[in-house]
Length: 143
Image (cartoon, rainbow, N blue to C red; front, side, top):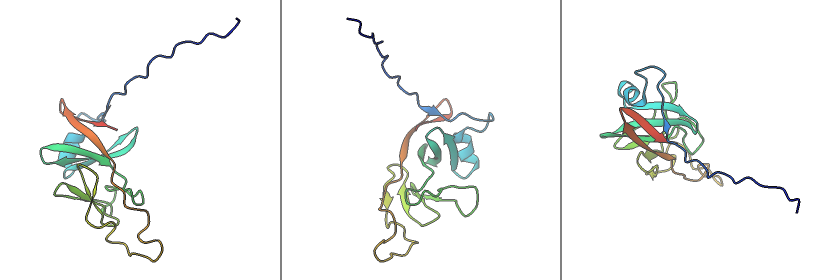
């Protein structure tokens, strides 16, 4: 009976929500959204998340379009997705995504031609969305 003893594994820890920590006292996503026209890109462990002021609250979505992975909001004027009516439009190919659900609103890739055999590239896919809430003036994102 010289078997090896195993140690009981502790239960997995519940992950706390990612809290976008400011680099400066005024750099939290809520104040950045106010200064940057209602949207701010926040680097989190899950990747870059776009926080958008939507009505009285905030929505958090992936900053990468699911079509080709291009940014919805980038560093240049060329990549500045338009936020309008609770949706964001991909600046590269014009797909409109709901900020609440990530669902495609309207035509998939309206700026691209529909080519024989391949169509408009990858199949239609929703934009990943993340739960967000404001706690003590900070936007928390479950990413």
